[in-house]
Amino acid sequence: MSTAILTGQPVPGSSIEGDLRSLGFDVRFAGDAVEAETLLAEVPGDERVALVDARFVGHVHALRLGLTDPRFPLAAIPGAVTARPAGRPALTRAMARENSTGGGTTLVDSLADRVLAALDADGADVHRPELGTLVAAVPADPQARNEARQAVADVDDEAVRLKSAVKARDGFFTTFCISPYSRYLARWCARRGLTPNQVTTASLLTALIAAACAATGTRGGFVAAGVLLIASFVLDCTDGQLARYSLQYSTLGAWLDATFDRAKEYAYYAGLALGAARGGDDVWALALGAMVLQTCRHVVDFSFHEAHVVGTDATVNTSPTAALSDRLDSVGWTVWVRRMIVLPIGERWAMIAVLTALTTPRITFYALLAGCAFAATYTTAGRVLRSLTRKARRTDRAARALADLADSGLLADALAGVLRRLPARPPLGARFLVALPGAVLLVLAAALEPYGSALPVAAAVLYALTSAAAVALPLKGALDWLVPPLFRAAEYGTVLVLAARADVNGALPAAFGLVAAVAYHHYDTVYRIRGNAGAPPAWLVRSIGGHEGRTLLVTVLAALLTASQFTVALTVLAVAVALVVLAESIRFWVAAHQVGAPAVHDEGEPA
Image (cartoon, rainbow, N blue to C red; front, top):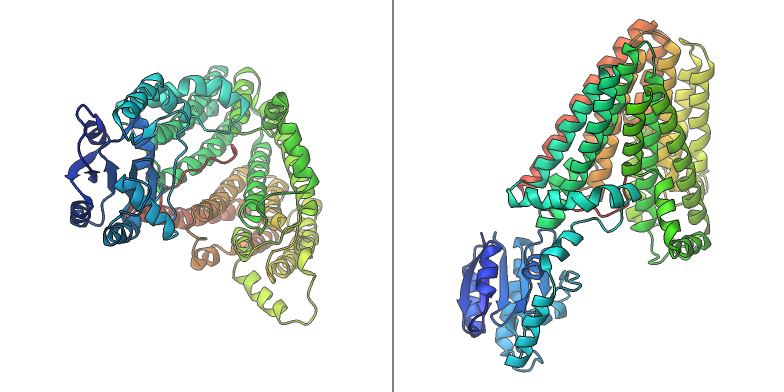
C-alpha cells in the first residue's frame, strides 16, 4: 500500500483526494509541517510515501507520472514529492531539516516544494518527469486556480497518456503499421488488469505456435505461420506500451521482454528449417547462419553502447561521422530510411512473415541473410568510423563491461595472467588486432580442412592464446569494443562449419541447439549489465568453459569422434549448457524481482 500525505488547508471542490485514491494511495491529512513529519514517520519504511499540497491542481496522469513510477527512488512534480523505500531516508532527513529551520525563509509556500528544495540542496537524485502539455500546479489564489482548472480541461490527459505509451524511437513498420492500434490494445489490457508480463508470455506462445505451423512444411502452415508471427509482434509491441501506459516497469519484465524476443525469433528459424526438411530441402545451415549473424549484430550493438554511450569521459560525440549522422537526421525522410535499412525487429519480422507465407523457407533465409549482412556492414562501418574519429577516453566501467561481454573462461584467464607478467605487451589500443588473427585462422581451418582433421584443434589453441592476449590488459582502445563480437563470430562460426563438414543428419540441428544455448548465456550477460546487476557469476562462466574453452572442446570432439558421434556430443553439450545457464538465469532474475531490484525500462534502439 502507498500513502499520500495531503498538506495544508483543504480546498472546497478539489478532486485531489479522489485522484490520489484512484492511483492506489491511502490518503492522510496534515495541517502543518510538524504533523506531516509525524505522519511520515508512521508510514512503514517498506512502503511508498508522497507529500502532496492540498491546493494541487492538475491532470491525474501528471500525478501518475510523478508519484507512481517504480523506477526512481525519489520523484517530484510541482506540488508533490514521493519516495520509494530506497529514497525514504533522504526524504525523512529533508523533512526534518525543513521543520528545524521553520521553513519561513523559503520563497515557496508549498511544503512539498520546500522539501523538494531541501532534497536538491542535499544533492539527492530526484526524478522530474517530462509533463509536456499536462498540468501540475499549486495556485496561489482563486484566479490562478480557475486558470489552472481551465488549462486542465483544455488538455485530454488520456490522449496524452496513449501517445506517451508508444516508444519515442522506433522503426518505420512499428511506428506506422503497428503502434496506431496496438496502443489501444494496451489500454484494453490495462483496463482488464492484465500485466505486461502476461502479454509478453502471450506473445511468446503465439510465436511458438507460429513456429509449429511453419514446421508442418505445408503452404497452409506457412501462411498461418506468417500471420501468427505478425500477431506475436503486435503483442510484443503491446507489452511495452502497456508498461508505459500503466507504469508497470520491473526488472523481471524487462528481462522477459528482451529474452523472449530472441527466443521467439530463433524458435521460428528452427520451425522454418523443420518445415523445409519435411519438403525435402535442408536449410539448417542457413537457419544457423541467420542466428549467428543476428546474434553477432546484437553483440556489436551492445558492445558499442557500453564503450561509447555510457563508457567514456566525453558527454557529446564530436566526431565528423556523428556530425554527418546528425545532419542526415535533420532531414525528415532520411531518418526513416536509415532506421529501415538497419532491419530492426519490426521490419525484419514483417519481411520474414511475408516471405514465409508467399515463398519458401530457403528464399526466406536468403533474404534474411542478405538483409542482415547489409545492415551489419552498414552499422558496424559507421561505428568503426565514429570510434576512430572520436576523441574520448574509455573508462574503467567500459573496460569492465567489455571484459564481461568477452566471456573468457578459466583457460583464457590463466593465459592472460601469464601474459600480464611478460615484459613485452601489445599497445593498449591494439587489443582487437591481437585477437583478430587467431579468430580468422580458427574459422578458416575448420572450413578448409576435412572433417576429423587435427588442424582446427591447433587453430583453437592459437585462438585461446590470442584471445587471452587480447583481454590481458583493459579493453580501452578505440576498436576494442569489437573484441566481444569477434569472439562470438569465431565460436559460433566454428560450430556451424564443423557441423556442416560432418555432413550427417542431425549435426546442424544439434549445432543450432548448442549455439542457441550459448547465445542465451551471452544475451543474459548483456541484460544483467544493462540492468546494473553486474555480469553472471564467475563460476557459471567457468563451468560452461568460456568462449575459448567451448571452442577448443568442439574442435577436439570433431577430431576424435566420428560424424555421428560428434552429433551426439553436440546434442549432449547443448543440453548441458542450456540447463546450467537457464537455471542460473531464472534463479537470478526471479530473485532480483522478489527483493525489489530497481525497475528497468529500455527505450533504446529497436533490436
